Length: 568
Image (cartoon, rainbow, N blue to C red; front, side):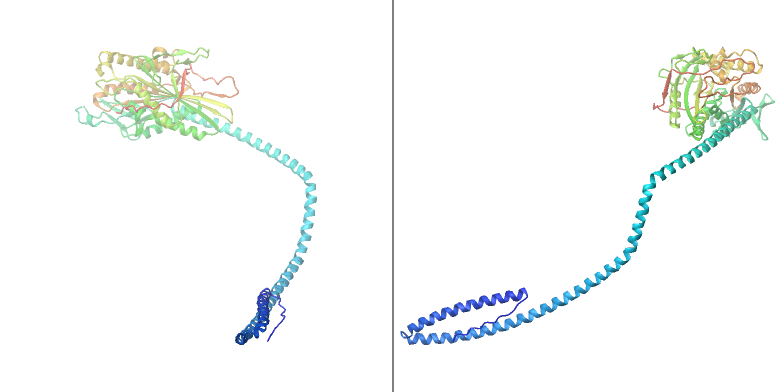
């Protein structure tokens, strides 16, 4: 009962081929089993005769095997059918996918063809532009040279026009600067080369409680230049340039002073000094207090503001010196050894100018520098006590400010000097109650103030000789009291009846000073390329120009503690 089924199936998919290979393997295995059965059958046939019982059993087993073979064949046929169906399904799906992909490829191809048709005109345009640019690049060196030549011509023309305009502006600028200086100088001249102000200090609380608190001064409500003084039943009238009542503020006082302060920027010598008896408020007017500074600090702040506004055409350097005249001895308040005596000498360069050898000078650039200079000067200044004022200074203090300027546009240089002087008390020796060393101090003070009065009288009388050398004070200030200077005297008076005699002396001295005419003012100016400076003009008074050249020049960096400032 040998049954062999051989069926050939054409398989195209890998899965089908794999299944077919497995079936073929199984078929080969079955064939091998059949071969074994055949061999066994031959052996059984050989042994048939040996055992009928064994033969019957084998026949039964063969029948079983045949049934199994039939079932295996059925399963194989079913599996082959499934594989055929799976193959057909896979082929159909692959065909559908391929058809879809082919359709997409055709659509993309159509888009590419459309883009190609669209880009062809653009390509032709780009090709044309490229050819044009290529020709322009070839012509560019010639065009560049031509453009550069035209630009050079235009630039030269513009530079020429700008240069002409600048020359015209510079000419107008010089004219306006000269006109401004002329107007400013004329204003000061009309007001008087020597101006005299009077400031009446207020009555302190301690003085109000005393028996001599009676106010002997009164003011004219319609004329701020008139002061009335009641003395021994008589009314004395004093006419000055300006009278400040006790309620006048530091700012109001400085408003009247600042026009003179700015003159030193233009190259003029300016002097502002406070005159009056001890305790009349000289130091307060000149120095003030930290929260309400006086003329000294306000003047320097104004100078800083003015030179800042003139930048960048003008470059200024502001230097400061402080000296003290104590017992007719000149001292350097900013030096390392303030007790060292200084002298005023003739400059050996033959210029005829005076100078102070060894005088220390600081360059100031900010209000902080100013405060340090003042603090150092106050610490070194000699002070002592008298019956009139326990904090009264017994020496003359001079703050010397030099302003040197250079105009980069015009090449002009200017140099002006501002002297701010706090004079010692002018009271009489018998009134001050000084004895011993304080008596000698008072005598020296009165000598220098008397010499100042002699100078004032000589200037007023237009004497050919002015006794500047009679004291250190007048010798040092002679350039501020000569024809090329602008001077302001601030007379400080007390309103109390107990001080009337001193107030009368101060006011009479102020009236004498007010009548002085120094002459036309001239500034110190020179051109950068000029070898000589413009000479100041003088009237009938023959004086020697004074400058202070220093052997010590510093930029201020020293920290010092603030010295106590004096008040009324």
